Image 1: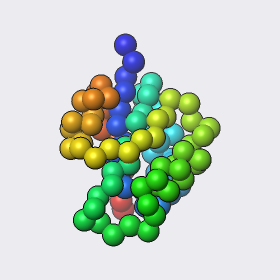
Image 2: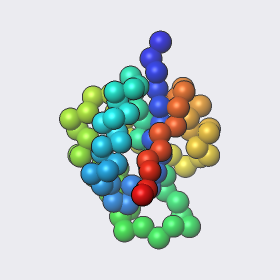
Image 3: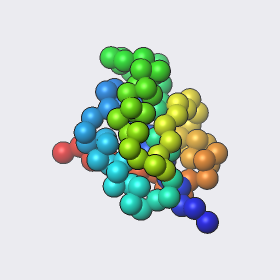
Image 4: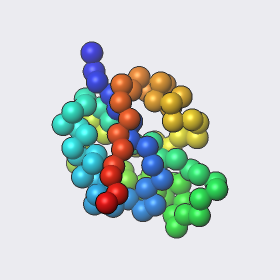
Amino acid sequence: MARMAVYPGTFDPVTNGHIDVMERSLRLFDRVYVGVFDNVSKSVLFSNQERLDMIRQATAHLPGLEVEAFHSLLVDYAKTRGACAIIRGLRA
C-alpha cells in the first residue's frame, strides 16, 4: 500500500526551502501532494495559477510529487488524497 502525504501552503512564492522539504518528504512517502491553497484573506504576490506553474516547473525533477490547488479544509483535502500525514516546514 502506497504511503501518501499532503504538503499544504500558499507558496507565494515557492522557495528553495519549500523545495528542500518536498525532496525530503519524498524519501519518506511514495507520493506527496503539494496543495496550493488560495486564501482570499491573504494578500499574495502571484495568482494561484502562477504559483501552481512555478512549483510544477521547480519540481519537474521529482517523480511522485503532484501539485494541485485546493479550496477545502485541509483535513478534507488530506482525506480525499488518502494521506496518512501532513507535512509542515519550520520557520526559524
